[in-house]
Length: 92
Image (cartoon, rainbow, N blue to C red; front, side, top):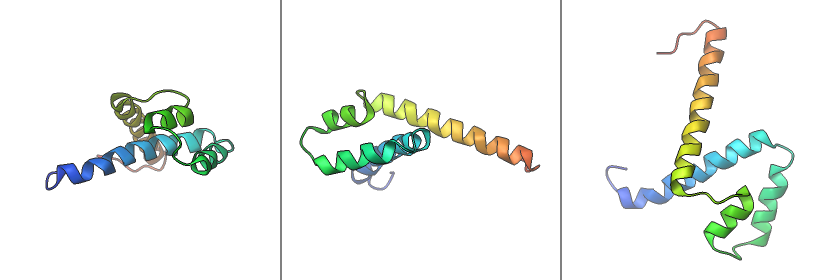
């Protein structure tokens, strides 16, 4: 990010979307594949905002995506810390 911030901005946005999708597939393992395949099958018939609203069921601003992803990551870190606690490993 420091060396070439404009080039990597797309990766940041893609990472946020991937994190949101990863969370969805874990919460809805039977429904997610169909929704995702439908999104791919229909192609790019609308603006990115409309496609994301259709796929996620709500509008997602950049700020909401960052907040959502931070909550997802915090939950995952908490789960990992709990798992380490069960086996006696101390996370620092």
